[in-house]
Length: 92
Ligand SMILES: [Zn+2]
Image (tube, rainbow, N blue to C red; front, side, top):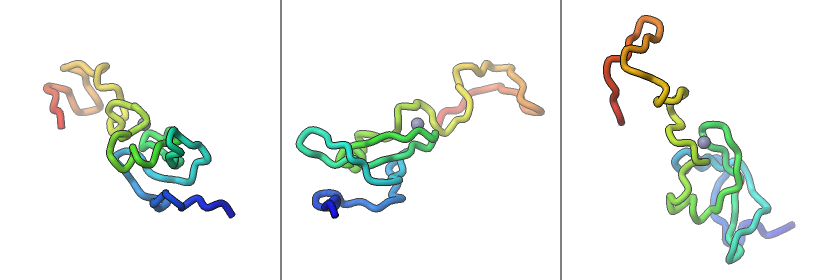
């Protein structure tokens, strides 16, 4: 059995920012760095360098505001959503 855990130290299910580790990746980066298979909260799956993941250098697949289901740039003040009307923007 391949020694996958030689340098790698992670658990399936670990979450880093928007990423969640879902499995091991066979991909190897420069310096033989370890990659893990991650799923972004938007659903995209990608091989991510574990080192970048742990250092917070990779936080998501690149989706800008992954928590918001709709593109905020398409919302204008005055837009109506059901009973709600947009009258201001608030940024976290
Ligand atoms: Zn994403």
